[in-house]
Length: 192
Image (cartoon, rainbow, N blue to C red; front, side, top):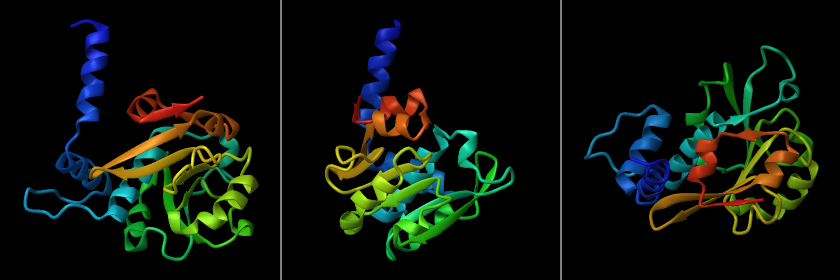
């Protein structure tokens, strides 16, 4: 099988990933058992699993860690961001560091975040937060329309029962974050 043929096969395989398989992958990331009878994951659970997987496939510069033994911090903008599904992000190990979840309501609380998730409901706070984090080693993820165009690193949408995402390469570069080639390949689009 030629390299080009394998690449096309992989792209087709991921493009046509059925909802059950997507739910299975998300459940695997969250550590829950999966069976055919299990109900589909909620949108919040799927987004929490996707956040965890994004963090697995991004490399942070050393300066992102305040202390050698410090934790890996997921920050969630707003009180209800991801709801109870946020607990699936806490108490794991990521990049050899224990994970923590912190809810943030304002710009002054962004210090120490590694991943910042801005839900669509928090869209009015999106621009000030993105401006405050310009050049900082923080992966910004959001689900509002036009998130990557507004300067966010990864925009997530639910489309036809599947999670899709777009990547803003300039935002990653500005934050000195390096995405794996696999993550870039899975994106619906990668902005230069």
